[in-house]
Length: 506
Image (cartoon, rainbow, N blue to C red; front, side, top):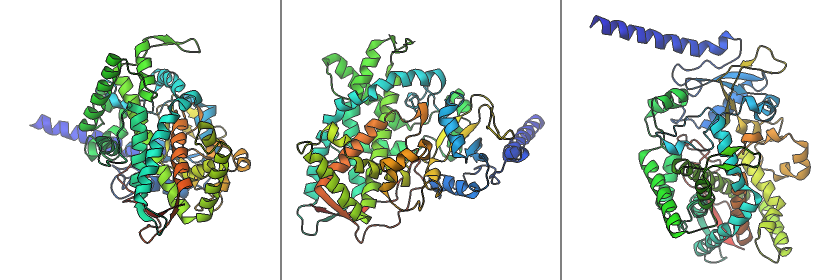
């Protein structure tokens, strides 16, 4: 009994020492930090009553004018360098990328295979997977999948026409759910070759499982915080992150799809087909001469899983927020509709890969939407070695330190974007883009570890918006909530409830 008491005292003392050290780490180095909470660090309210974007942006605003290249930040119990200086951000993402190539996120390929995807992987495993997947997202492969996306978009227009029966008065439609149904059908088709038909039947397993993946954790608050704070230890302990029903659904679906296609020798124009070909190759030589192995079933499932999640959520949210802004700025919407019609007249009235690429004003609107509504709350990297900030010898990012780049906060900084709350697509005119540093716009990241699926995401967003704007007019109504409220339980920027707009045929 006495031994147990001594053991509890010793453990309590170690925990107290760790918490004290962690809470005073940055202060002892003379680097500013908001006093952290003993458990939540600088994330008080995380997944409770505060939206993650707001936590990050408020922290940035507090230290923005202080002149520090970075400030201290505790992401729960994980010490992090919170990057204030855009030049330092560029070093981390591009110039000194070799020292910040890892993300240091939790993943456990052995026990939780769906976490072993490109976004999470580090080191040699990330490099090899990036080399394997990059050829599947070339312009040629996008053209390969383009007809599939067009087919879904045509069904999308039919559903909308049924919702808006005539021109007199139109109808009030909840666009958030509709955009999610569209992108679910696109990604379901392009990932698995399966016609989900979510546009007609909203309550499909695809939708349910995707939503659970973004809002639910396998464990409760304490164990989830442990995984975020100590990802390497969590992996060594064999912890898992993906909810069991989500794991079973996607693993079974992938295995069944592979078995059917290999048995029947079925080939489709989709992402799954490209991954199956990588699996069947075994070892092969890349263009740079490096020999890498093919994909096993777990690796293949993980890549399909993240492609599905990323493509479903980011594109549907971007389309939703774009329509929300266009409904409030009908002059911009009218100009976009005219531009779409002008481009289509030059391409025989057809939506082709080339005509979609030629819609420059549509690109500007998407870029401005992603600036104002950046879906992911921050970019994260991890230092592979100690890094002394150029020109600031006191500021050292130690080996293993997490690095947080608050992209949404950069996007709302008036030094980069005057009158930042205003929706203004002219910010992304060719002249203004050319005059701006690339790291001032980071919805897809930058450098060698930018979003590998960026081309696909942009393609389906362009197609969806082009089809909608050429056929319908969107305006606000008495059910449109201005400003929006966001869900604190979501890791991405998700509004609470639906977004209702009046829709009329044109």
